[in-house]
Length: 251
Image (cartoon, rainbow, N blue to C red; front, side, top):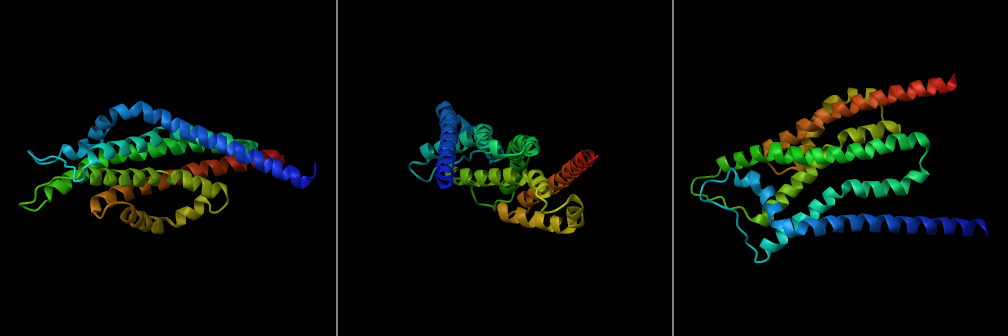
């Protein structure tokens, strides 16, 4: 068999493996979705709790579209299924790329995947339990006289999903820093010198990723700064470990 044929055969095998992993990931999402769809209305009620708790007495959420009462909880259940299946999806990704990694790369990637999942969940939990009560209480308190608060259920879902993704992504900062240092793009010492720019950048990102209110922006920027510092600490520890390992190998 020629070298070109071997390369094509290897590429075909990789594509088949990728397809298999993608199908497994989709199947995992479908299994969770089928398990949750019966509770779609209850799930939406739980997500809507932070807003319902601060709405004025006698007011309620509304549905301005005929199909919203069905499709909005349905959409939320799909997104939740993807969130819950994330560890399994990352496992499929890990199973696909692991054979091509060196031993020291495997030691780093496995904890990074686990850490990225936990941080993403942590960002969502922070948004739901900390940001939502404060932000919604503020919005309700500043409503002009004569204005009745009656939020559309579809608009509310779009709003909270945007914040969930924003906080989930923002909480991945330590992982991003570790990867940047690991690949040699930057170093912990270099990142420390750029701290003033990072502070400004965190508030700019908070402004871009959250709705146009100072509360959401600040409550996203501050955790980002704390996670930036955490990422530098972890990257510094990793740097020292790598240097010690390299010096031992030279000896």
